[in-house]
Length: 276
Ligand SMILES: [Zn+2]
Image (cartoon, rainbow, N blue to C red):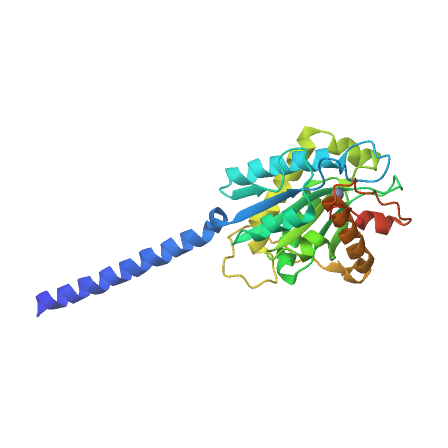
């Protein structure tokens, strides 16, 4: 019997070893979930749609594309599969952007925009989301972008922008500062700052499962705690924006030049992004 006993012990040891290897391999896979995730990057505006407000010197569409391309490079280097809704100066209708996003499973959607308003002093970073599932991603992106930018935080905001409402995957729109603010515009015009923005957004994408207050089985080990951000619920002020967005979209569909908005208040400007 000693021989059988040995065999049994060996079998038990093998089983344990196998379990250990399985567990380890599961842990390793969990840590590498990024590699199975598709990030759909949406560079705001493009083509005839410059973005921003009438008379704005710096075309928002150029800044968004540059940051989006840099973000793609950073994320691709981290092992993410990346899809761009546009990769050149072309106009892509909002419906097409959403359709691209929704055609991927296990994906997230990141829209890159810059803000604009008539009041030159307005500044800061704001990050938008709509579905509750998107709040951790919004929190993480906002946390890192605000942390890495000299600009102040204007907070995380819940709002029913078309691209956020219609996407079925976690979706976030980040406004990377005001191109109508001389200081922020100067920053945005330097390649090193746009690279920094891209790296911070990428850090948010990587850290989205480490946001506290969320139940996630794919929590990534990190030394940094990323707080779930409190947010301003601005969904009630979006009804007119929805109509605007739809009108804008219909106009786009008819290939008419999309009208730039010229509403009065900064709040409306800050949130009246024709493409958002
Ligand atoms: Zn925009």
